Length: 216
Image (cartoon, rainbow, N blue to C red):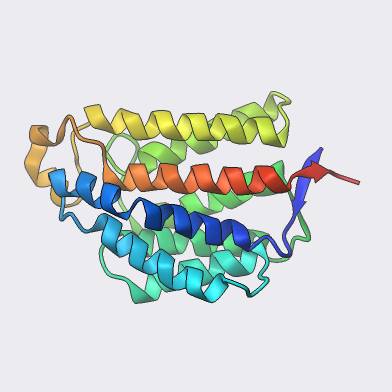
């Protein structure tokens, strides 16, 4: 069985923030086609503020996730701040007392984050939102894990499913938020939230996989 240490893994979140900042223009470009065009700007602002607080602080993964979630919840605007904020805070609360995190704990973390999002939003899979990335990614991770794949292998499956979920939004009609006003005209464009969610899951999986080791 593979696992990684919660302590000193806060750099995973620092790298995640860097990935979002790097894609600021891309995310705003996507959002500009059917939305306000500020998704990348708002995300980069929030993730950048969190990164400044995490850098050099030797935080646990739980502490860094809580820092990021709190910033997104309280210090940036738009609809995505609260959604991602509650997701990361739920992630943090799930693992805060765990010294080591295995695939089962990681799955519980993902599920609690999803439940947090669903508790404050009305979107469902198929509405052209971040859930079209997050839900199939979690389902794929759980299936791989239950089929006996290693933690690392399950993470690779999660990333592939996240990317497929992101790409599926191109063919969907937006039913939530500003883009929903466009109706059928929203077809043919990726959803910005689904795209940023894929970036988050890719970076999270990469950071975790690099720290995995066999359990004692």
